[in-house]
Image 1 (spheres, rainbow, N blue to C red):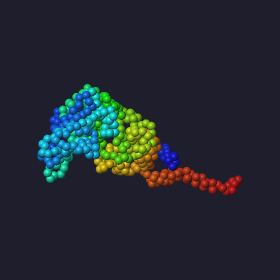
Image 2 (image 1 turned 135 degrees about the vertical axis):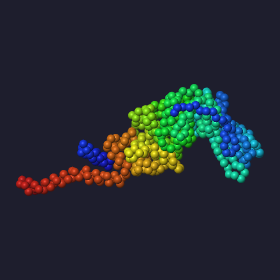
Image 3 (image 1 turned 120 degrees about the vertical axis):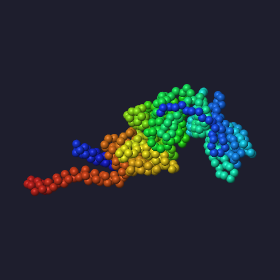
Image 4 (image 1 turned 180 degrees about the vertical axis):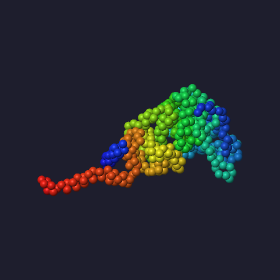
Length: 469
């Protein structure tokens, strides 16, 4: 059917043509005592000399004001000592509870960075001679006063210690002499922390400007929180890693800004992803980071639009994005996924006269309650574009149709013909049938009428002499 449709569209197109004629600011000092509801907890973090071990010491005070106080330590840490609390093991976690009428308690836990750490096991961590990037373990504080409900809060996240020696988030902790700068970023801030002596690839002010500008341009929601970026040198691998749920990432320090494959911008986009994805939408996390990193680099003038298009183009991939089992390599979301999003972005802009874009879809996904499914994605695209694009999306997202590049029309067909085919592809089978009927009645009527005229002429001349009957 498609060759015939394309032939008719081409004829229509030709007929129509014939008749138509930051500036970075050093971070300030901060205390190391966390004061919140519940017992007061003071935390110290240190690296044991000459080792890859981080030790967290938690001092709890004013315990007599509560009927019971508990600490729950996750599987990613080991309890070394517990003074004033009893420990039990359950489901791989350590549960500690205060004993007697003690006013104070001290607990020490440790984490280890080793060469066997699996990136899929909660992240990657590195130990250099003068610094260590380690994990912040799960330590949950629970307490209750007499006759009241149990309250809880997570400890160790954002430990406020000496900023020249310790920086912690909810996932990563950097210990060692370091430099920290803070960048204002559209209602929030971005902190860039690096071990002292680590050289940045871009200039510090240029990096601050790029991140502040990216926060302003990327209007997808989830930008009023603090973002924490660690810039690391060796032995960290090239590239980076992020934990969107905690707005944290580490990036190899000499990564470039003037590149459509900018790791700085890629990992920053990840920190703006507040959604939870169902299995059939796993591709969207890396695809959206890859697409917007390239687009931001181009919009900021750090790379050309041609370089962006070249980066998003490439060998066509036939995998179904919604089916990870069909991916022939793990980079499918970065390649086909990013290309598909570039096309969806373009199609939405054309449908709305530039009033809306993929950012509006991204914002809806960030605000979605619960895991985002493929159906939720198609509904969001419909709401933003003003019409359903299920036929196109089913072909290139839920289906295996290949995408070779960044085109305004069909992924495999550029120019006017591709645009006309895209209009029919979006419409669905019913509209395609109606469109073909109109085309056949109009375009096909010309040769039909010519044939009838010739037939009439023949009938008028049949009585002439010498004509066979």
